[in-house]
Length: 491
Image 1 (cartoon, rainbow, N blue to C red):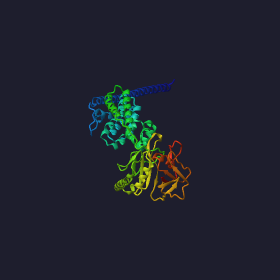
Image 2 (image 1 turned 45 degrees about the vertical axis):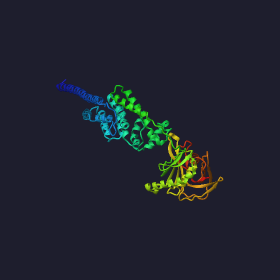
Image 3 (image 1 turned 120 degrees about the vertical axis):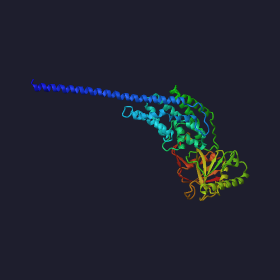
Image 4 (image 1 turned 180 degrees about the vertical axis):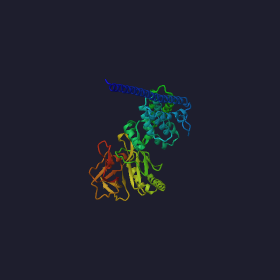
């Protein structure tokens, strides 16, 4: 081999050797860098665990011994929990976000810091409950840090402490709205977007609490929900104690549970009065002037105005005084509300009341600004006992006349649709009597003669399917029947 060949061979060997050395150095550098990154990540996670340990330790040491709620002041537990946000060590948590930059634990630390920032915002009324729950739920699912799981789980139970003790300082009318968001946690049943309280409760009853709701009038359920709510919170306390038996927070939750159990002893009895007749209608239960009628009395304007005996007028001689009392009350209400808000009269009557009482009310209001008589009832299917209006008649600006029917004289009550003139004679004459549920499929104009001797319950049963049309037998879907009903009370 000549000199050039030898030189080229040596150069090739040197190039290969240099490449080998370079690769080895790069590999060694990569390992060192990887080790350094791992050590930094471990250091950050170590600091996190240390901070969490100090926070939990300090929380445990400062749990209040006195758990008595004083009127107008926050409960000591709430003052304690808010104070945690001011722990110096709590503030140090947020420094970890910068330290974790460009490290493998950056995303994990970022989610943890986002949760604690959200916690501050939530307790400061700057973050909605739903958003806070989303942060807590996501972190609880993703983290492997045992102490963090304990802290988040405790805070989710602790969410119920404020409403439970704080409600003592609230007026009754504000309590339902106050508890609304906490029902969603305890029952694990979130509201639909923009869903108001009543639709939420109705859906809750149908899907989660059917047995509980089916025994109660719907208007009592917001108050009655306190008992199943408290039971659900007790279950959450027990679940926490089972998962974290050595937790320092169990001492606080033990006190909380004892107070919850005392609340169960306050369970109320709810009685429907008057007991409204059944209807398939979904019409809203509204009226400008409401006559509430039990088998013992007619109540109007927050006072008893006519005595009854088993649903009948006790003394017919009282009717003149009843009419005068109603007129005086209507005059006073008209001065407060204006005549345009005195047009709808709602009959809120017990099913056992006789129709002679409804006639007496009609006679008392017909010369006032009232225009419409609405017949209250209750829709009891689907496990929700909502008050409703089975139907109604308008008696102003409509052509009414007395009729003879089935050997009786029928005094006019009104028409179901005052905006559509009834032409000619009714296609069918129907008697609304005891035990008869009338229907008029395919008819556009019918006459309903109501036997005045029947009960209000029989009356509503008789007219219900004249006013409402069910899509199927179960009557889940209901619409208004497109029919003109002329109604009279037959003597």
